[in-house]
Length: 258
Image (tube, rainbow, N blue to C red; front, side):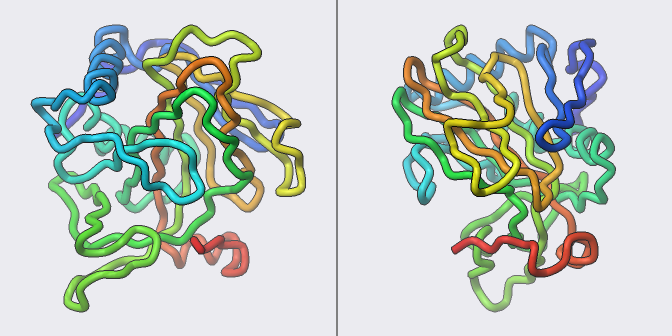
């Protein structure tokens, strides 16, 4: 599905921040009608309803060491969430961070129930795998039955490609009005040794806002426990070919999934 991003983004300023590492923050990301569609669709799935354009979508627990329920994007994603796997959205963030993104996108919907545990500090600079199959716009979505995203496991006859996460995007939606002390922020850190409860900066889960950053050896971040309200988001990554990541960061900087 071809997306005209110019008509979907609200005309608001996006802000580049540099502490503790370069990241972009934006509020009022999408025009109000699209945000309303996204929030309504998220709420419908969360309440157990089947979306006409993505009937398979169901929140499940299954992300190791991550206290949340999720739905991974797949080749059946329909409107409105298909905006996040569109060529236009992909190219927007590739340009913002000047990365040679290869069309591979992974991500999904995340729901943290009240009191979800803190995550762990990490940088997202992970090697991953995709089955070598793209759509008409050159976008590749993980097909887990053919090639598992974290390990590259699958039938021997399937052609696969190794890539590395290059840009992370967290978009917040369908959340109660946030107030200081509610928790549920994305914490940003300078090192793995930082205390989770002492981030250098935090990004609150304000509706229709996002934080995005290039995945680098120093892009340390995590989810911080939400003590008063659920936290809902769309989390996604753009990727580059592994050779490009190794040339830039070195093989030893890449963090393989255990």
